[in-house]
Length: 270
Image 1 (tube, rainbow, N blue to C red):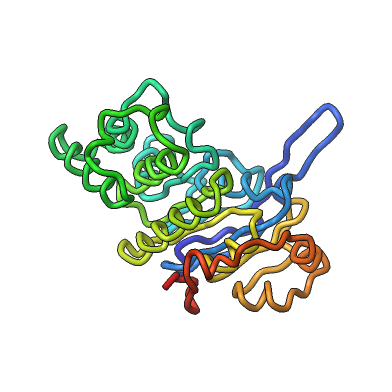
Image 2: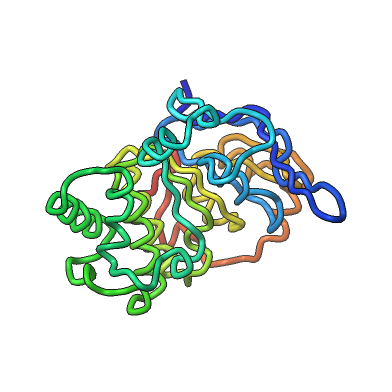
């Protein structure tokens, strides 16, 4: 059984000018331990899809099943309890972090919501998770404004991982970072994927990042998936004209394999 399965998921936004199908009848599945890359231009619907997976937005139709659980059938209280297993890392790290809270408070918050552990146990878990993403205990009492963009994103990753989830949606997690910091974050994510057995849905417009980080890929265009399959197959020999145009339009960059490392058949960096 796939860890994540979507069947005919649709999300319609209604405007004064009519209806816009941000997500239009998407069906896909993701196996445990897999990293699915979702690529497409801005406005293709990929971020909306990520929010629908975690029920941060409500679809108009279709089904979302995670670990055998029908997400759309969950009541509010049950959904809150289940969310500890399904987390998200947002695109803009600073915008997603409460500037009034310390780093400890930010990372601890999901534990409080999930009612996991007492104060002492939560502190130890926060400390261990920060260290896991490359931040020392010195960061516990700092605030987001005192951190670099890369450090802020590491806090966002720690917040997502502190409840020990099985599925993490990564919504453009490195797009605002320069190449060197981006590569460092990707190496951290790859290491955590291996050590924790995580399943990722990696949303990105950066084909090179997806090429070297993801085991499978789904190409979105105007709310639909137009092509999907193993990353190497899709990006080396694209069949759909839109995928071909995306690859042709991609700007040449420093090869990620030279900065981050290569990947094996499951998209795991070496």
